[in-house]
Image (cartoon, rainbow, N blue to C red; front, side, top):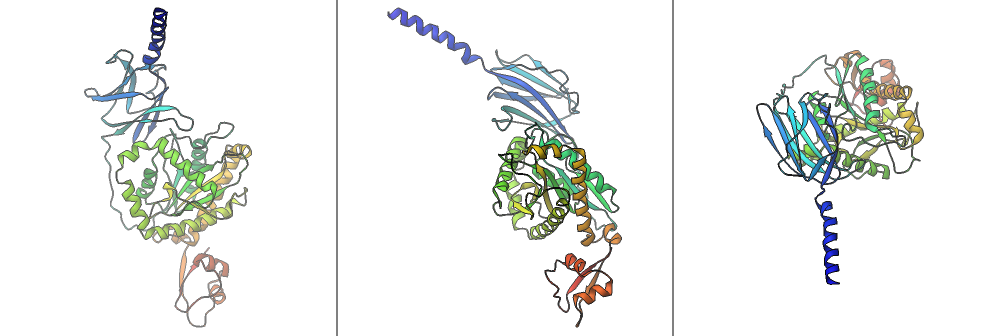
Length: 436
């Protein structure tokens, strides 16, 4: 009997042995080229143990994955990535392992990190290749005259971060990019305005880089475009969000914050590791007095956008909503986030992918932007000259209706331009007088 038990134990150990050394698989490899970096993502069947090193003449990045088998093709992976010329296998340093070689066209600063399963993805090894030879030129800010009003258009999510996914399989990142490009086109047709895009293709950009791109372009306004989502298909309608230090005002807002945190984890880990001053920067942001002005202007724009959106679609919320969102935290740029509808709602998912509805949404947003800046054009812009706003100092005996009559404008336009809640004005008060 003891011999039989001994034999069974040995048999069981032999059965278990192959499983213990079987290791993991590389099920897929994806490349995400961006203007200033390239991301390589290895989809893995489980957590992998890895090491890497660089070789020069020619430039190569060698990645060793212990107890890992390659189960996907490497053909054509580097076709669209300028920094990569080829991705290939090489002789592994140990049996049962995989060695991948990334042949590079230039010197890079690599950063590798593993991600645990999240959303639609399983285990991943992310390889970020930052262009080490890129020369960053910081032009001195000049006092400009007759400049264009610059609108930064931010297409939410992108690349490794798909955003929310509709029931029909629609990716939010695709909807936002199409809508953002339509907004860009309309803005660029407006005399005295110019649009810049934070991303122009399907790649991920860290939240800090999005606001940095807007700041580098000296943007007067940042509009981040998204498609809303909820755990049930019921909620619907468009909404506009502004920055708040406080907790989100609704459960949808709290859900939005969690989705953004997920996107940051999914797509921007390397940037968070790279930017050691992130927390210090955000701390300075919140104590910067200019934040108050940015929020005030952002809230005004948000109200105007809602006024235009309600003409073409249902509103989820009639007033601007507030949440703590990284893309809106720029201390010196008024910023809003526009949710064109709920991608989790089957009806609105179809609308969001419809070119006709996208055109209507884009036109409504741009009309609101034009209305806002006609009333409040930044000094030194061509828009200020084209839509001149006069200044009037209130004298003794003058009423708001008298001032309006003298300048041949409506009382409501003066109230809107000066954010007056009633018709009361004071002697010595300086009023902006909008001109059509």
